[in-house]
Length: 460
Image 1 (tube, helix red, strand yellow):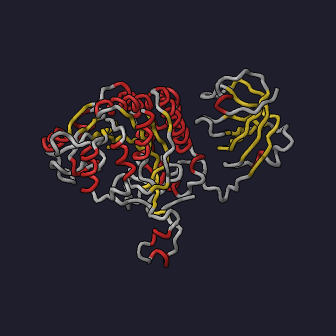
Image 2: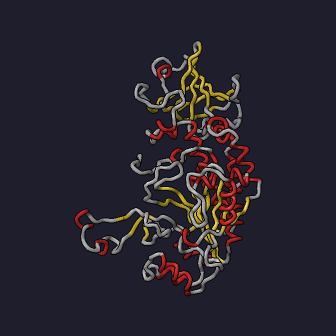
Image 3: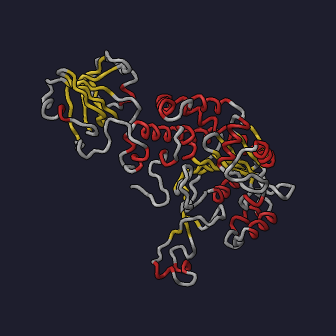
């Protein structure tokens, strides 16, 4: 019986002799003697399905022999054992139907390795390549693993707003959302006449809203797009990026770190188990030793350092860092990489940062100088996770918000959470695109985002 099948299922040793159908896009056509060999892919796996087309096909000379890379096909035939190395089966075609042609003179993807820089210029087509197709499958596997992990840990999913009037980080790097025209924007207090009656922007984080539900449902998480209008062109930053943000009531910094470490290990374990073929591609062509690195992270115990201890290690190393190291300044990517690679040889959790360099919502430590914050650093990326125990004391939080220049009336709803049944609570944020970058070994975050948004660039 004929049935439509994904290529990944066909390659998992379907019964030989069956007549099946497959649809996909042509990678290559190779002619040998009187036969044509078509390499068909549908994106479901890295490997393609070899189609053997014979001259007996009615359209062999008129269409099959003229096929080129990128054409879309519907193929029907009998599944047989393949005599060629590296492929268990092939399809002997009795039908090759051309669904869509791709002009070989103008189709930009050919049978050769294209640079990642070139592929960024054709964001609408680059997912058809081996590497970017593998990135998409790994993103999907990691996304599913996130939901599975938190469901198993008793969390519920909360959709927090994309449009918000709250600046979680207090850095003023939000994109403004407005219906006003340029003339209206020049008025005094223009946002009073805007759609929401006040200034609104695209969210930098869903954390503040997630806290609302953590203080009614215990364990929650939000997972979605966030935005930052930061004019940064580094290999680790995007203007639009996905954030995973769990929040836990009745939780302190120690519990926060334990949950974050367990999550990272579970996600890496999932991708090692479910994406072996795709990871092997990156291990061979992108980042040698990638699978060993991921396996080590899955199995090792993360190293804990206070911020003060981390600064001491960096100063003791006597490296010529581009950014000088001293207590009270934030750690830079070069410092984070040094701590992971040279000091610990493993992921590092840095805790108790100076109060002055962290946001207002982090719980002030008893020394009055540091906060109950933590960052998880990994080799090659730097900060992968940032989190903290949240400030649950009304007076302390109000004082810190005032010092940060925030309007207490505007954030009255957030302060109410401390007035009505406040409890210790904690949470963290995982940069999902950075996680994909770490898992794939890609050196530039723009190559793991389907449609990267960066200063001066918003493809598709």
